[in-house]
Image (cartoon, rainbow, N blue to C red; front, side, top):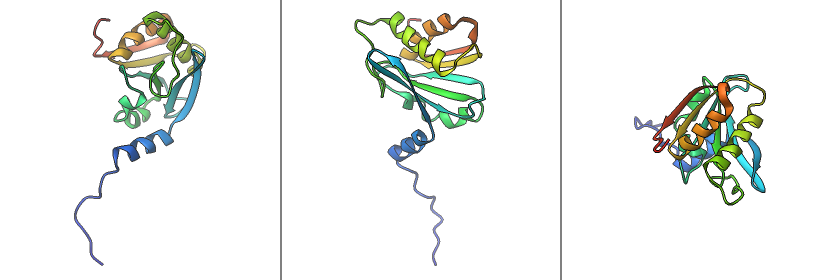
Length: 150
């Protein structure tokens, strides 16, 4: 028997994405005539951390962060309206109407008045800022990365 000292080949990006997605619980909330898709990892009883991705993306903008964060939080990553696996919002739409869809989704995914945290990137930061304002004191932490124009 021969052994190799070379490290095992890393999983392909597609395989790693599929593995992480298989670990998620998928939740759907209303969006236009269809649904907005959310994926959740981590203990259901842990403090919720809502992740909103940048424009022209999906939950997988957070692929390198999900497992680490799920050790400490109930990670809830959205596919923003009209992006990823989420259906299109009603037209015409603007930042306020998109934020209303996302805020209602947060209220359904994390019901009641439990405190939550938000981490948002780029386009998600802009919509997330409006969402955080509408959720008020429930949001105990808001982090916006690359939030141009907020």
